Image (tube, rainbow, N blue to C red):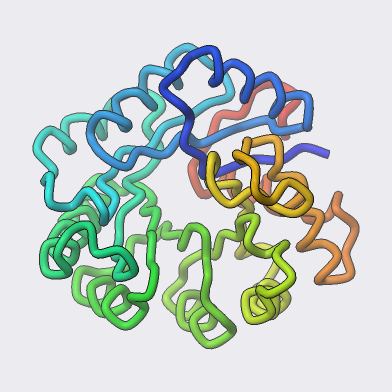
Length: 255
């Protein structure tokens, strides 16, 4: 089986990054998207992608970092191996940046995704109504994914109605995540992606430990069980969808 972890955050330490890559490759992960949360992490992701054939980068400002602004972000979007804008969005759980600032920075990143015809990677936590409102106001980019989707069936249907994909993380393996698991059952297979969000949200049976991209296999296998499918079917579909979504030039033998 071949997988794509379409959303992870590599550590700055290169030795740990090397361990992640070796483990992921051994687990059948053939492509990884290293996701930027601010300008520094975005630059590091681009640098890492430039030296690894199976790593690509995104450029974005996470809602937690919205108060820091977006200066210098647009200049990075045209660099080689940058495949998306984000992650960006709204997070009303911690409020590390004021809500009005979050909405403004989210809107500006939607505009950049539309201008540059790039995918948009959306983070939404306890902010569904405002997330949908900002997207509706700015225009949903043609390629949009709700990363680490945590809603139920109602939110899933609204995301799908606007043409977006849903991405499921290790949370889908948690016993108490009944509403999310129901959303994973109802989402069309060709409209879903899988991710780890490493180093966060390690799936069962690794819960409570630092997460790694190789654990995306446990996410995919959990979805397969929920839907009564073979893991190979989930791997094949999510890999094809992620490859098309980000327009990846996959390494030989990765498809």
